[in-house]
Amino acid sequence: MANAVHANSEMKTTKAEKMREAIRHAAAHFLAEESNRASLITVTNVHLSPRGDRAIILVTVLPDSMEKEALEFVKRKGGALRAFLGDRVSLQRLPYISFALDRGEKNRQKIDKLAS
Image (cartoon, rainbow, N blue to C red; front, top):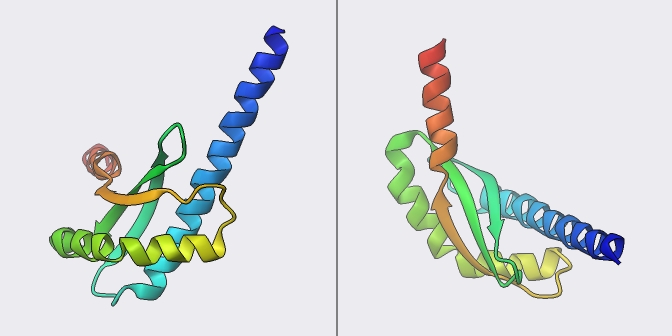
């Protein structure tokens, strides 16, 4: 019985990982097509709720001075991205999309710069 529970847990994890990766890839493609190229917006990660009904897409922005404008842009495009996901990605449930800046990646880059 314990093996069945473990296998079911692994299956859910794998499914969630595939869903996160599909959303990350589609969001990156969408933003590359829709952006005006004034800044480089990179999708770094996707946090998915346990039920799969909410997704927080983490992004980094270069140059740093364009972060505010870029975050406003991606938030404005959230509805269009959700429709894009519906057309491109096979999901049982289309999650509500929100965006946040990936501060962890920015902190890692600062540490790398200090270490070199």
